[in-house]
Each structure stands twice: as C-alpha cells, then as structure tokens.
Length: 485
Image (cartoon, rainbow, N blue to C red; front, side):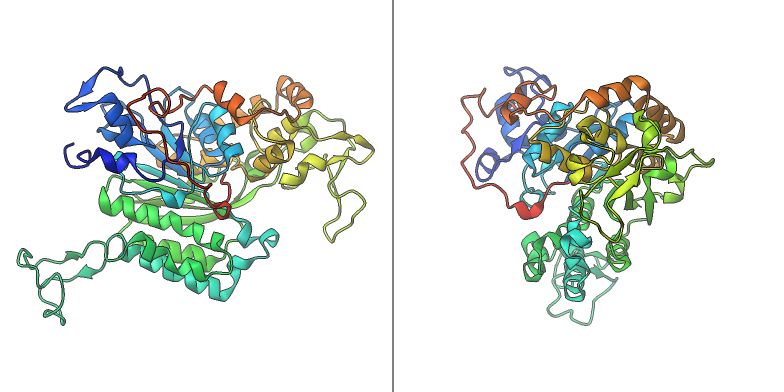
C-alpha cells in the first residue's frame, strides 16, 4: 500500500469531480488503516470508494466500472440477473447531472464528470474486473448528421485506437536484439534479459487522444474510451476480465472491427459483436442496439444472448393496459416518409426523447406519461427520473433497456438470463404496474432535493471532514462528452 498511497497531495489537488461513490460506513472516522487516517484514505481514493483501495475479501462482489453510465439501465439489468443487495459493486461515471441524479435516487453510485478527466491507472481501480461503456451515439445516427461515418473521421478514429495500444502496452519486442539495437530502449537497457515482451506505454493519454481534435465533432472520439480504458486497465493491473459496450445500430462495421483489432493486439482472448432488438425477447418497444463483448482470458459470444426458445412478442397496448385500436401520434400534423403515427396493437416504435409530446390520435389530450414511456423501454414505472420533463424523457430515450443489459451481461457475470428476464417483464407489465404508470407523469425535483432523498451515500470528506480542503471551483466539463445510458 505504501507506493500508491504515498502522496496525499496528489489526490487533494486539481479537478475533483462530484462523487456519490464514497462509503462512510466502511469503517469509522477515528479508525486508522496502517499509517493512514480515514480522512487521508478518502482523499487518496477520491472519487472512487475507499474500499476499492484494498483487495477484495472472499465473497466480496465483483467490482465494475460503468462509463457514460446514464440513468442506470445497465445496473437495472444487473438487478434482473441477481436482485440481492450488493450482488455487484458498480460505480458509474456520468457527465449529465440529471441522469446522474436519477441513478443516485435509484440507489446507484455516480461520479459526475467527463470520463476523460479520470485516470484509468488510479490505484483504486487495481481490482476492477468488469468494464461497461455506452458512449453517446448521436454522431452515428441521422440526429447527429452521421458525422461519425465520414471517411476522414473514421481514419482519425482508427489512428486513436492504434495509439491506444501504444499508450498502454507499447510495442512488442521479439527475443534478441532488433535491427535498431543501437537506439532501441529495450536493447540498450542493461537489465534486459533478452526475452521478448511489451515495451510498456510509449504515449501519454493526451497523445493518444490528439487526433480527436481534428474530427468534425469531438464526440466521435468518445467511443475510443472503450479501448483506452480497457487496455490501460489491462496493461497496468491485469485484473480486468471482461468488457461490454453498447452503441447505435448505425455504428459502421469498420469501427467495430477496429475496436476488436485493438483488443486482439493487446492479447484479449475473444470478442464478439451483434445487433440486438429488445422486442425479440418480449420488450414492448423496438430498441435496436449494437453490442460488443470481450473476454480477457475466456471465450465470449453473443450467441449466448439469444433465447433457446422463442419469447412471445408484446404489443404496447398489452404492456400498458390500453384498449385496442389506439394509434399514437408522434409528430402532430407533420408527415414524414415513416409516417407520424404507430399502432399500439403492435410492438411500439423506438421510444425517443420526444415521447413527451406523443399522444393518442383520437384523444390529443391523452399523452404518454413518463411512467408509460418508462415501461416501454423496460424501466420500472416508478423509476425516479429527475430533471425537467424534457430531460426525463430524454433519459428514457437514451437508456439501455435493462432486459438487453441482462442478456448481454449474463455470460460475463456468470448468471442465467432467460427466466429472470421473463419474470421481470411479467412483473413490469402487471396490472398494478400499468396503473402506476398511467398515473405517473414527469415531476419536478431539484437536484439538491434529489440528493437529499437519495439512498446512495454521498462521499464524505467534502463537507463533513473539515481537515480536507474543499474542491477548487472549476468550469463544468464540456458538454461534448454528452450523457450516457
């Protein structure tokens, strides 16, 4: 412990993101762990949990980092797989304050900051075994003008992914002296034993990300954090066992191929990519997303996310308890090539952030409630969405469907998924849930009030421990990082 924790000043200076990942009850404020007081440990661990500075004890839950974590779709999926409290030790990173407040109100931990401001080599991440990444997807879709698909942007992204290998593992050096023995840092090292191996990082993370500045939209480069974090954690600690990524179904194959190539170069054992639709396993709306999974030391395949037996489709009317014949208007009097209505007697169209303005075509006063939109994407009717009504529906439109999270993560965390998902959906679309959803509309609650009512503990030390300096005021992280899911 002496090495990583030897410099308390390093943890106390610079940008300190808001965090609800602290664990004030882990041990008492007067307790000392070796030479460090509780306050010193908090300062060194920030913004991660104090317990993460120490090796997991037998029976402790797996530690998982969730980047671009959003309003807790992934965590809800983990709850489907194992509803026991504390079954998984997850900390999410999310720049959107409303989405972070939603997750925290639901009992999940969030670090509120730009993912790129955090250090993947932080000593608290030494024993992290799982990594989840849901970078913003608008740049690949019509809503983002498909800028991510531009050939020049893709070339720049491929360069970033290539640099990610150099910035984590470096280059592979074969046995014996190379052709550049006179200048090679490996060959010239008097301690070198002549065996092959990785050189170690040759670039800083700033150098790795440098080509992103040349992209037409910097948000395109956020998907590279998938590889930057996975490879840095692997090279530094080698505890990471698996990776799960969610993205738009419009993500080009050339990008997924480049992501997998980078993992392969870093000696990850296997990876797989597949586009899944949540409606195929019983969700009442279509949600087509592309998923990538990878195993560091084990084979993984998204074929395991396919049910052995067909799962019945659900219509929106069945899920919400509506009468037959209802059509939902999504665009008022405006008409588009895809139409401006959908039938509730079929599986609902993909729910977007604009669902706040959707209404029954034969009763314009009857709008879809927040609770009903929540059910359609697989979240509980009473999920505590925070922020303005528009912000709440925006989170609903962005969230990863928990049923999809469950079937993608099941093999990675060693849990079966078909029966838990079936049971979850039966309860989700029960008459009691339908009644709650119909009566649940957007509520206004300040973030301060949401934090006060949260069941997720706040990080101690910022106000409670007077011996620690308060975080220096900084400008808000760039909105280019966007909210996650």
